[in-house]
Length: 307
Image (cartoon, rainbow, N blue to C red; front, side, top):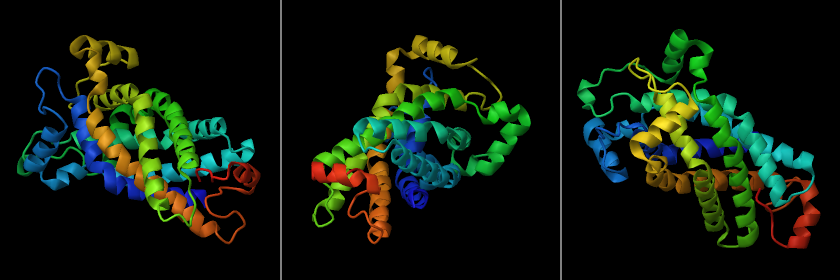
């Protein structure tokens, strides 16, 4: 059931947050010498004006397909890892989240590569004049594979691992701590707002912990658009980015990311938690209990655990 819940939660998160992600990527990879956008809101307005509202949803096919599987993997691996670890403790939540984050990189990296290339397509051009290089996300990956092979399809894999492994650890740790603090009682009239708040804040904590790595990942994955490569690797990209723009480069697109992180993760975690509560209400563990082995710990704490 963890896998099914993850699928549903992932789809909800993509629909809510993709426009913010498009703005984030555009800001992260735009030229420092000739920037097209002055900031988050200017970028948002420019995309809508030049490319219509649909411009904000460029590349949504890749995350909609990929995040369905990614969230299934993340919540499935996290739930099963917690059962293997045996105790529902904050450190185990971090370890289970980190394991889930590392495993899902196999799908996440190619998916985000296609998403980034699709989001960069037609940047700054009027909708009517845009010449599409890629028809869709699958066509994008197929073309990259033809030109660069498997190495090209997995461009940014190391940075994705560096971002996702601790990022998902923080993600589940923060959600666990917040839900324990706030309570998650089904009879509580404020249960859903509490779940939404805990999920949203967990997303923000996760992004803040790894955002500089995400900037480098986006630049590496956008590198080569138009056939021109600027970076030879992670260290080269980091060095050149700092030399041109200073340390401020690591905050590019952060506002958009945090604006996106709260609603996306609020929708994802609340959907997953409520779904699991619904399907498990007749299976033994009640309320927000994720598995039988958590029952004793939850009785001692009075408050329920994260999932």
